[in-house]
Length: 68
Image (tube, rainbow, N blue to C red; front, top):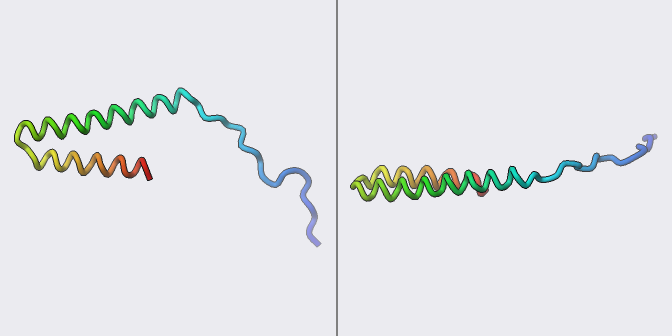
């Protein structure tokens, strides 16, 4: 015979989302996106399309990892 548990089986989550942390992470991701776009534009304007492609691939992989 199995004894019954008294009280809740799972503890409720008591933590809250910190608004400052969310805002900070959004600002950091925006800065990374702006830096990637400006790096691509600068590489293309100086005649280095291979470097621009590499920057684009790396930044695309980064943001796909963040999004998924």
